[in-house]
Image 1 (cartoon, rainbow, N blue to C red):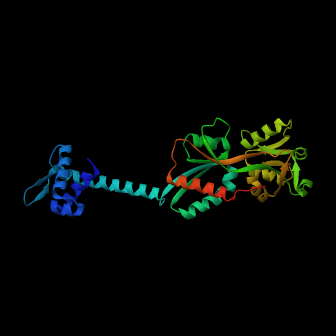
Image 2: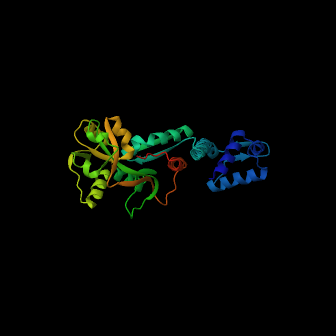
Image 3: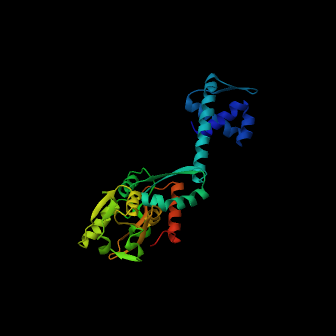
Length: 300
C-alpha cells in the first residue's frame, strides 16, 4: 500500500462517492479508479462494492477503514514533526563540554540559540575533556567542546579561540599585587590542581616537564570550583585555563597573567566526520563560529 492509495481509499470510504472523492483529491475519475484498483489488486480482493448508483464498503473494506485512518494520521504527524524539526519549530540538540566551558562560556551561547529557537530543547553534558571526545566519537552527542585533540584523532576539530593558562592566587597573597607572575615564582608555593586524568593536569605536567620543571602538588581535587576555594582559603596557588577566571574570582581567588612559559592550547568544537548534523545542531555550530568570529571568547 502507498500513502496515495490509502488517501484515495479514505476519500471514497468517507464519502461513498467516487465523484466527491475526485473533487476532494483533485483527481480525474479514471485516475482515482486506477488508484483504487491498484490497491485492491495489491491486497488481493475488493474493498468496495459498486454499481451505477451506489458505492459501499465490503467487509474487508470495513476492516481496513480504521487502520487506514490511523496509518494516515501517523504519516501526517511524522511529516509535520520532520518539517518542524527542519524549520527548528521543535527538536533537540545534545552537546558535551568541559565543565570549565560549560559553566562559563556555554550559557551565553545557549541564550542566543534559545532566543532564536525557543522550541528546540538542549541537553548539555558537562564532562572531563576525555569523556567529551568519547561521547562525540560514539555519537552520543552531536557536538563537543574541548581542547584540540592529539594528532591522529578521528574527530573533526573547529577551533574557536586560543586559551592560555593563568595563575590563581589567594587575594591576600603578595603575588596578588602583581600584574603577572612567572612559573618559577608561582611554583615556589604549594600547588593545588585537578586530579588525573584531567587534561588540564596532564597539559601542565607535559609542558613543564619539557622545561625540567615539576608541579609541587600539595592538594588536588576533581572539581575546579574546589580548587578555587582552596586557593581562596590560602592553602596554595594554582593555574587554570583563562576561561575559568570568572569562576575562580567568584569563589574569592585572584587571577593574574602567567608567563615564562606561556602555556596555551586551542579550544573548539568537535564533530564526527561523515555524519551530517541535525538542523538544530548545525545552527548551534554556526552560532559557536559567529561568536568566535566576533571575538566574544575571553583573552587574559
